[in-house]
Image (tube, rainbow, N blue to C red; front, side, top):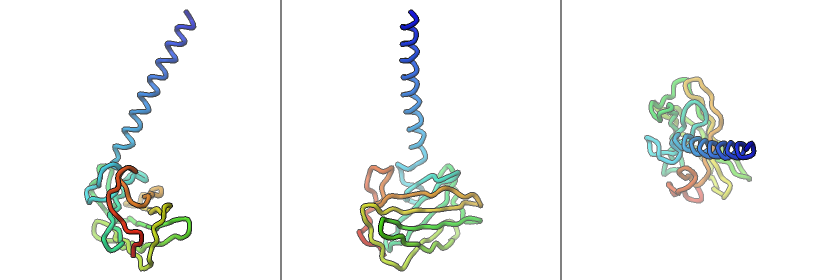
Length: 154
């Protein structure tokens, strides 16, 4: 009888663990990485706010610092540092503060390789976040290809 009770308890614990895992993974995806942001960009949540990265045709990027509801972009008391990195190089972009976003540009040709990624460090209204990384080519939620970036970007 004791053995049956222990087996029942173990099965119940396994079931709760599976349900908890599903709820946690659903909650993680709920932060918007599988959908475009309000400015048609790619969303990450590196801290207590969201970053939205919007690639431009000329190789530049717009970066919006959004609240937890993916709204209210601000630049006051904020900063953005953007680099494209791979195993052979790291290219720094110059990010200029605009009214509601940052405009990040560079003058160097960037070669996009299989291990290239964008590394974004941001501070929103005085609150610093962890690095946000975007694998290249850019994809929604790591699944679908969304923007077609060429092998070389200006």
